[in-house]
Amino acid sequence: MNEILIEGKRLRLRRANSTDLNYIMTLQYAPENLKFVVPFDENYHREIINSDGSKKLDVIIEEIDTGLAAGYFMLRELDSPCIEFTHVIIGRKGLGYGREALRLLMKWSFEIKDFHRVWIDCKDYNKIALHLYESLGFVREGFLREIILTDGVYENLIVLGMLDTEYFLSVRS
Ligand SMILES: CC(C)(COP(=O)(O)OP(=O)(O)OC[C@H]1O[C@@H](n2cnc3c(N)ncnc32)[C@H](O)[C@@H]1OP(=O)(O)O)[C@@H](O)C(=O)NCCC(=O)NCCS
Image (cartoon, rainbow, N blue to C red; front, side, top):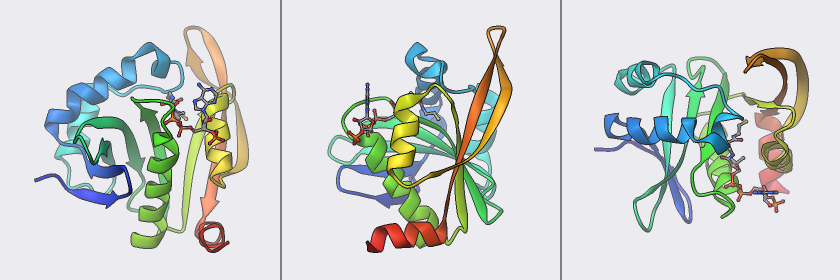
């Protein structure tokens, strides 16, 4: 039985299981995604999937109508008041799924799980993701200079965050 976190109009977020491992690995290593994420190996994902889910979760974004996977996220630091969203990857891009899935994740984080803060980091040249996060209300909080070494080149990360108070103000306005 798949554990459903939350459902929206077109998408549901559910906990990944071992049959999703291939999908997650394929999505991470697809060239259009790999340049924007730091992939984890299959064992790392297997450990998360087999864990009690209290610290980290792999989450599948699924189309409600078809039951097909449309993307995946990883959630970390679930045992703290400040949850990290990472590996935001949409397989079926440009359909508004990224926006809908993140809205669902924000709703789950703040309205259902009562987290105080969510944060995410993003390569500084990832214009599409930065536009998406900022348009959802994430605030740029920090700039980590030359922190990731990719193919011999050091890259910068932007840290973005949202507080529970900011989330509730945005959904009421
Ligand atoms: C970033 C990503 C998650 C966005 O998901 P998506 O489902 O394609 O995005 P959406 O369809 O919800 O669109 C979100 C916004 O981005 C814009 N956008 C989407 N694709 C775009 C493109 N190719 N060019 C320019 N803008 C684009 C949309 O116009 C929309 O903005 P708007 O509502 O102001 O018009 C997805 O492109 C992806 O998986 N990228 C590769 C992995 C990645 O970069 N992950 C983020 C790591 S921090």
